[in-house]
Amino acid sequence: MLKLSKKVEYGLIAIRHIAASQGAVTTAKEIADRYKIPYELLAKVLQRLAKSGLIVSYQGVNGGYTLARGASEISISTVIDAIEGRLPALTQCIAESPQSCSIYDNCTIKNPLGKIQLNIEQVFKTMKVSEIV
Image (tube, rainbow, N blue to C red; front, side):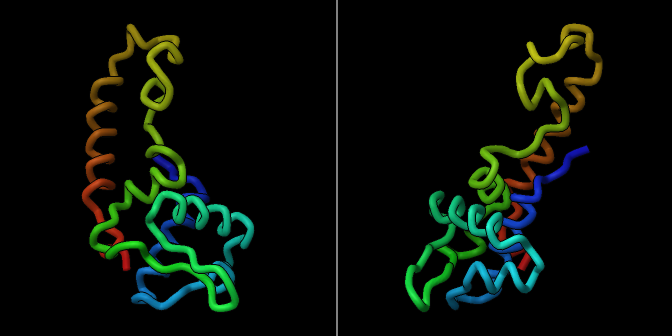
């Protein structure tokens, strides 16, 4: 079924931790150590979140990360999009294209699964980071 990548999992853990810090600067090392996340992968995920404008990166000795805006203004789908580009799909034809599926024209489940996909996407769009803090 729907499975989020490790990058997305780590990104959600990190942004949740940063949000819970209530404005305090949080380092990648702090997050990696606290949650036993590989530092290098976490650093790349945090770079993507910063590049997308969800978090602010501060350089230097006292550097780290803070949220760029309130946790109630950031949807879970925005976090996923920043890391992966889009939410994982339930089926190959949704993930790629109808041409990628050899039975697309005869498939009897593509429409019901498409509706489920839309519902899942809506949940991720409406759920805010503040709800997971």
